[in-house]
Length: 193
Image 1 (cartoon, helix red, strand yellow):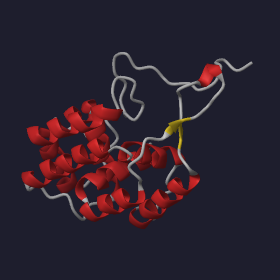
Image 2 (spheres, rainbow, N blue to C red; image 1 turned 90 degrees about the vertical axis):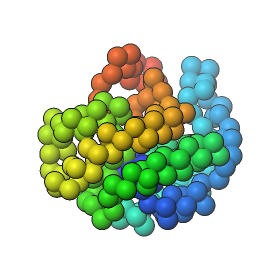
Image 3 (cartoon, helix red, strand yellow; image 1 turned 180 degrees about the horizontal axis):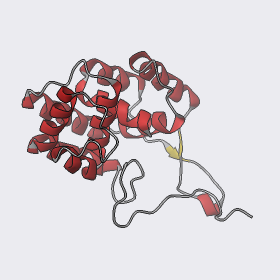
Image 4 (tube, rainbow, N blue to C red; image 1 turned 135 degrees about the vertical axis):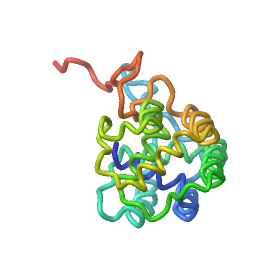
């Protein structure tokens, strides 16, 4: 999950990274996989070459941390939509127009940025400087100030909510915090037999 948060945070502030991902990810409607009846509708049939293409971009910008199939699949899923790309570009523009510094920070900063764009509880926590409470206490002062200021910027908050609700709604499992109605998704019989 942390790799997705970092990639999402970097995508929101790094135009070159975002454009390379747009090039690597086709705009398509992936077929739903033909699973047995009890698993119908739980997966997308994304070719392995698409994962390879996205991994090549991600590791170029995030070379010091492994990229999971989950993170690559989430990126492929959201960027398969032209509408999401437009919303992602609007989010990037909203961040730019704040004139808040977002470049040259450490990895934890981009993890926190991506997480707060997806998780409104984290965004509210950062706005209230609760970095230690949410395991971001090791951020430098300038990084904390940037995240706090972005969390307090209404244009950033509104753009993040609109973009993220397109794919990550009530059943989202890409959050860091618990929220009412949270269900942990399972893809096989539970408990196992």
